[in-house]
Amino acid sequence: MALKELSIGSTIPPFKDLPGIDGKIYGVNDFTSSRVLVVVFSCNHCPYVQAYEDRMKEFQSVYGLQGVRLIAINSNETVNYPEDNFDEMVKRARSRGFNFPYLRDEHQSVADAFGATHTPEFFVFAPKAGTRDFVLQYRGKMDDNYQQPAAVKRRYLQEAVESILAGRSVVEAETHSIGCTIKWK
View (cartoon, rainbow, N blue to C red):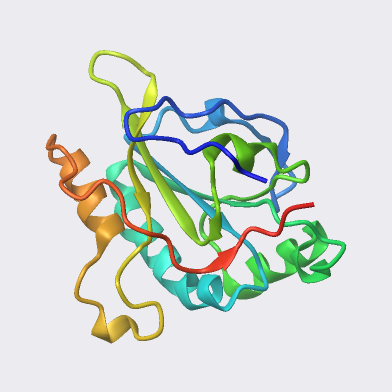
């Protein structure tokens, strides 16, 4: 269970050897050529995640053209949540047409290192000026209305990414994630 919290300005925790639904194995170094890296802790069974899947795909379609990379990581235990196992991840990603990597954190070490607590929970990293060290710029929720996309008034993730791309500081660097709790072993 995550006991530490990754604070704004922290360097991205290293991770490697995470299987992706595309059959490849990923680590943080596979994404460091991005202008902005968005890591979302996700899963299959959570209704909050399901409500955001289309918005996550749209986000990647729009911002991917600007060098932003969204990756989803599923860290949930699967004894009590078998719908979150790797085979089910592959099925869901294919049926939903995910346009971003969907990775499995079987040992839950990545969620723990990030201090992730919910699905979905978004972490936005950008290179520190003059380096390739990715540092946390935003953590929290995607927007202010998971149930009704048309009623969204604040797009926290989008606002953070647009600020970073424009070379500005993120005004609201943290919001409280709303969703299902990560299911720890």
